[in-house]
Image (cartoon, rainbow, N blue to C red; front, side, top):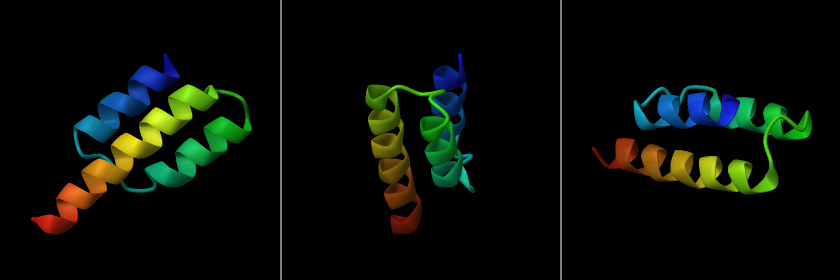
Length: 53
């Protein structure tokens, strides 16, 4: 549930503070390692695209 919510937020461009949130969720075992890796990669991709525009 949390994974899907975070993914949707990143896809919609709501990336402010998301890296910190992902770190906290991962540290609290709310995200698996695979979910964390996927979301951080998606976040990096979205952030990179924002900077290019």
